[in-house]
Image 1: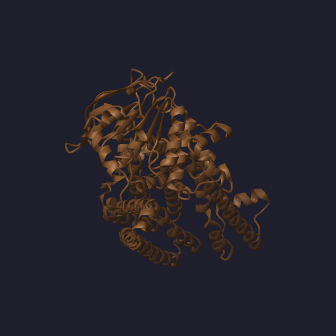
Image 2: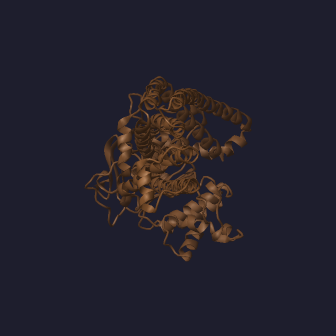
Image 3: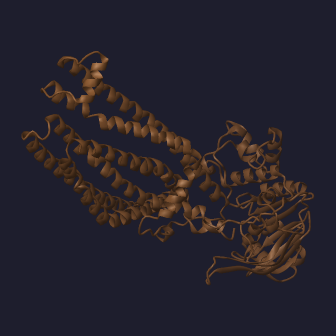
Length: 620
């Protein structure tokens, strides 16, 4: 093949596109909330359960207050409690009061635990479904992206966006909405209770909140930048691992394991540095907030104890303040944490929307019509094409015109880089031409649906991909409803039946990932059988037999001759013996057609084809 179909290169790890995000992108957060719309009622249920749980947590110190003031001391019960007990049959003695308050305390803990379990379970279910919805949209978009997109983006980095960054939708509910709402409700509930007990102590407790706000402003930028860099380095690490493992054969063949390991260590070191730096900044922030919380607690204890000595508040009320002061800054920290979460979400969410918003798809017109009754009449009219969109873009084809009649076997030959693969890529609309048009049965390919076009064209690549499934399923990949008999017939035509039959499980043998357990020739024969079974009006063979011996190749092309009846077949090959019996041979040089004709005519023509043929004859 002349151009690779979106393959990555280990040398390009450092050239990854960076995501620059100086602050929270509220438009990203707003767009992410749209994915929660189908789950509105479930989210409302989560909110109600959470608020009920907040009520249990706020009430947790109260039973102990009554134990201290009304059981261990001689303070009278509050008027409301006295009325309650009188209505229930009389005010109990101290032992009975102790039992009542202990039971109430246990019930509060049990209720809080039950609601926490229910809330956690429901939150996980709802948020995971949202992640699934978002991941499905991203995956669907990635499947429709043009090959030009994949030639510029690392597969590993895209994998991280799909499998990792899509979890931002989880954090919208579990990391921002619910924690923020519950923190606010908790703060107001605690503040109300504290204010009702003692205004002075309540104001002392709340005076620390502005200092938290100042800390947040100071640390917001460094936390943003460190989080951004952490995810950039994580994407680079994923990309390097994917590229290294997919290139393991060539790495081992060239004894580059040591060098690759050193490169891996360098990438991991950068990732670790980014993670350590991000953790350091977060740790400093958390330490300072914990220090402030401790100082505020000490001040409240000191002032409260002094006021208790003067009779301004009871020991039980001071206990509530001490209990709340420790819990008070939990919601404050939670609110600060949601800011950090929002920073992370906006960074990662932006990476997701970069895919969803990308226009690098082969566009299908709204009024595109499906192809029907395809004959196989192919025309390239004044086509120009290249790679890239800048002024330095590489032009591959220029004013390229070719007409192929239905049922013809057309061989396309030429020097490496001449534009052969680019030509057949446009026939499948992997790319669209810069200028001119490509027609099938007189219809511009841009006017037909992609699915109907690709359902009528079968492509066999030199680099045959084998899926990690049974060989029968691999052959039937393009025709999943084929019978076992049809699969076997296709395998026989591709000269694959004999070696498959010798395998322990025959056609049910499961290939390893990428087909590494098969030889190159065996993989090519599986791919050819897949193409024969699909049985489409147009077949494109891009160096389909480069790994086969001459005898096997001859038998395959003999089968292809009978298969080709009424079908248009394009063969790209550097092995000219493969295509000498083609109906038409097209020689491409420097992006234009240099000559066309049969083998005998071109050999005697003394031009590009004759020169290529002479070199191959000498080489043999």
